[in-house]
Amino acid sequence: MRLSTTVPALPVTDVGRAVAFYADRLGFVARHQDAGFAVVVRDAAELHLWVAGDTGWRLRDPADLADCPVRTGAEDFIAGTASCRIEVDEVDTLHDELALAVVLHPTDGGSAQDTGWGTREFAALDLDGNLLTFFARAVVP
Image 1: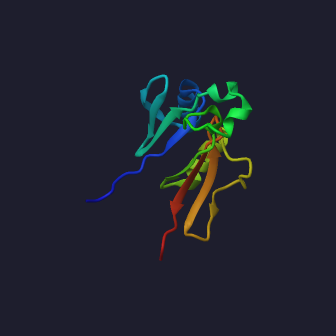
Image 2: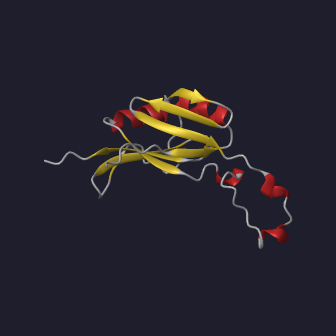
């Protein structure tokens, strides 16, 4: 037995808006989309987007939360709390592309950065605030 590909699943508030953002700003294409779930791809990268839209917890009496906590797993406050790392072959070129799309993380230093763990990387945020870190592995001499 051997494990294979990992596919990040990111919570979003609105699948339609998220798919449009991923297409228009990040260069992904929707391979599947319905009201609650989407699969977006760019080259060999695949992401799943799922709607975190349960607002029922807002209607509950706060006194009831101690005996029955919020835990459907799809509460709307979960959208934007995930992260994933996507390996790319030309991280500096992608950084320049996404800088023009105005999606880079607010702490971006103007270019991809070398790390102490052997990667060169930068971060971007999607429409809901999910963190996307794009990285290239350092070439080992």
